[in-house]
Image (cartoon, rainbow, N blue to C red; front, side):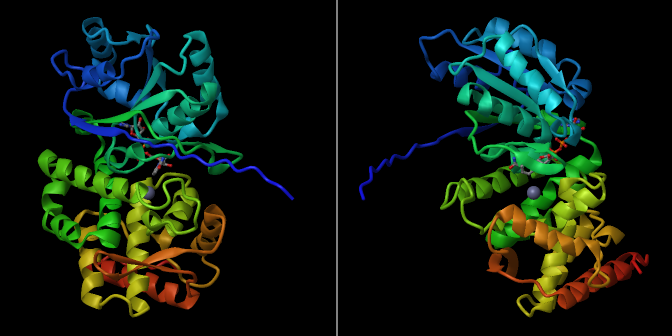
Length: 392
Ligand SMILES: NC(=O)c1ccc[n+]([C@@H]2O[C@H](COP(=O)([O-])OP(=O)(O)OC[C@H]3O[C@@H](n4cnc5c(N)ncnc54)[C@H](O)[C@@H]3O)[C@@H](O)[C@H]2O)c1
Ligand SMILES: [Zn+2]
């Protein structure tokens, strides 16, 4: 028996810049980033823009063109590609093919950049196409939703849906840089503004009590779309996600996935609603269910649970939606447990709470107690709103 050994490590480092009006001529944030990346080769940058963003910001594409006339650090590819936004962009390979064709047509090589401006879905699509074209073109992310600025856009994952399976094709590929521009958030619908807040509640609950208490004290400002409050929430949430990703398992080789607190039912719910329920909305419902289950299990006190449910309610999350209710062991949401296990590819690992700010992993969930947990959330909402949503 003989063998050879190969071993090396690759360091990844990228910045998340916070700015407002990224493509205003006087804003040097983007140009300075491109400037410090000196390279002898002639470099290009190819922009892909989410159609929803282009429609809400009709001046954006012209601003990009003007910006690159003034800042010639890299050569802007003349055509800016506009792609449909939201989940449909990840649902077919047609757009992926178009992106690869554009890389070919415009001669985008590994010294160049692909920059994506959009919600999490468009960033996932463009990140994936960039990661596989020429075995990896550097991609720049410019997230335009709360969820993508505080969670999905700042991490290392990308992907598209394939054969009906969410994120079936994808890679782990850190971005070259991320630019969060608060001005994009001004044009979000109220639902999209609110839905990303649940990821901040999630990460606060598993890792950071002071952050949870801060959210608890600021629900009113968040609901009223106060930008300064949202800026703090996004930055803190992004930092907690970065700390976690930069920890033991950035490329998710193990089965523990604490950042997926509340997500086993959320994934199922998104699918059951045919994506009518937004990811963040589903996560809020999943947090309510798993927090309530933590209480039923005796891990959390009732007053701790009530604080969580009150925060979700104050932000108008519909946490007792009939689709998430578990009334008996045939409730379809329960199949989400098995699917989540398949998604992890190993032991079922669910994060619960032992205190506000402290997560704990468990490897089984009791159906009867899940039914009790679900009933608790419904009864809580009935008391708050006077509306019965019990699903018989
Ligand atoms: N890669 C990851 O780690 C990761 C993590 C979580 C979620 N995701 C993915 O993120 C996606 C959800 O992303 P999302 O919540 O950002 O929403 P989204 O990308 O689905 O966008 C929602 C809608 O808002 C529009 N839009 C985006 N920005 C806008 C703006 N500034 N003004 C007006 N309209 C705007 C889009 O056109 C779209 O119609 C899902 O596909 C999910 O799988 C990825
Ligand atoms: Zn999520």
